[in-house]
Length: 221
Image (cartoon, rainbow, N blue to C red):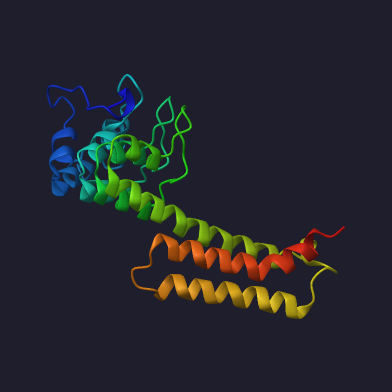
């Protein structure tokens, strides 16, 4: 593994959070954060955020170990899921390198940035491919396609809601059609069971086709 996704070097459990985090002991983690002598959780957070020589905190090791329940528990304490090492590696990159599929799913659910890149310009899915973690790569491709559809829907909705952009360019029917198309796609996202990556791609392309004449109008001087 590259340094930033390589195994943590600790040989002893000097950090009291390390053992429960790496063994999936959610209750043990919670007990440290619930220490009555540390009512604001400052000491516990310092233990959690204490970084090693290449800029990884305890959450990185937890992701490498695939302890999804611990990751979810720690997220409740306000941990930054977008954190990066000095070379740009994220929690997603580390989980992908180690083939921790369930942890990847947890991180994506917690809104970790799928598109974040390392200093080499690699996304987490690229790291997964490099280390032949096929299931992880497939999931990240699926998640990225889903996010792309969501992003387009949000972009259309924000554009139609912006009076400066639509003033004098779109009529009532244009706006209604655009918002209706977004509702249909949002409903599809909400209700479709087990959609594939290609399903997301197709739905996004369909929305783009619907919106093409609208965006053409908006682009006119």
